[in-house]
Image (tube, rainbow, N blue to C red; front, side, top):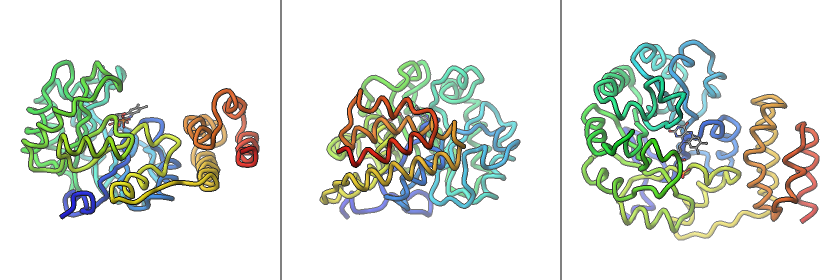
Length: 320
Ligand SMILES: Cc1cc2nc3c(=O)[nH]c(=O)nc-3n(C[C@H](O)[C@H](O)[C@H](O)COP(=O)(O)O)c2cc1C
């Protein structure tokens, strides 16, 4: 069967091969709602959420809209303390699947022993994954790096598969590399070859030609799209169409309507001040799609209230 036309199967569920990657501060409810205008059934990761927040706060604080379909809810934890109760709450709230973050490079996370630090502490990692697996009836995935200080991704990947996870995402950079430097796709290819569960790649997948080259080099089962989705929420649909030999061109009217929807959704979910600050992460890119380059977009980015920003955004299409 044609790889690009066949679905990605994780546990008992099927999805498209292009998936929304977790981006802290970006892939929140308004973002996911906006992506779903184009790709209603795509699998989208949430932002990272610590297990203690899930146990101690309400779903809105976890960044979850109750009943939201097709999400991979990403959790992080440095130990087993909150895991059982967090998993129980996630299941009660109808989560499609759960992902454990063992790749976050941020000092605030790593210093507590969570995120990528877990790749440097395999006994602790084993305990956390085993407990999650025992608590969860839904699919369980893990998102990892090439390693913490040193490369050990192959060993960790094998251990995770043996512990019963359903799929693995590899972002092939070390913790010290953060989010820059060439991703080591050869490493992803080695992991894919060694494992029987689905393996996804994350890092640098920004277009269909790149996805095709990476597939041919690695044989991976799915592609996480991260920063390329910022201000471009139609990209998962575009990749899906182009991978099946179709063209996809979004017109200015649709870009504009999407941008306005995203702004409204951000303000309604986060409130005026946080909503606007969040939306500006996307606005520069939307503006660029509409043909506005810096410094034309500077007035937009300095608007200090959503009403003013909305008024300026509303004029953009007319100017073009
Ligand atoms: C601002 C930002 C926030 C991120 N937040 C998360 C996160 O919450 N969880 C996670 O697993 N990875 C996170 N990542 C990593 C991305 O999911 C992804 O692996 C990385 O950006 C490489 O993919 P890309 O080149 O498609 O962006 C983040 C990356 C960035 C740049």
